[in-house]
Length: 167
Image (cartoon, rainbow, N blue to C red):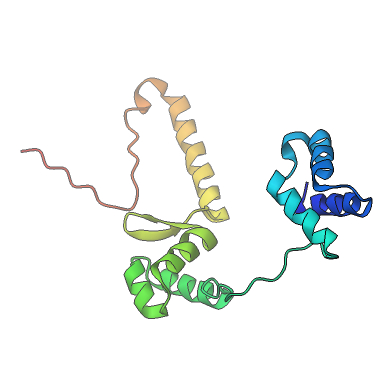
């Protein structure tokens, strides 16, 4: 249940003339563990007894967050796509955003992560998915043709080079 719905019930019970203790008992009896805390109920009972009409929270002072604006997200995305090896420090210097804002944009908004020193999207594109299905089908066909020896012939890797040194 939404907090404004609980507040509506509290307001209704206060208008009926019930005390804070009676309101708390009724809410706990009906909603059980999902009912608001005792302190919350008492606070809202006092507010409604003073004549408050609104069920919503009052506006708070302070500055809204502007670091994750669409413009900043687009700027960071553009810089990352131009140079996949760009670091957070370089992004900070270029955009003027803080480390935490850069982290939030890259991981929270763009859903990217660092793989082999490159920023990559977390989701596969449709072309990548189709390519994987095609390759998997071809490998399965080859395996069905020679099942005994084939599994030892498959070598998988990514785009990075792996050097092996055996002295």
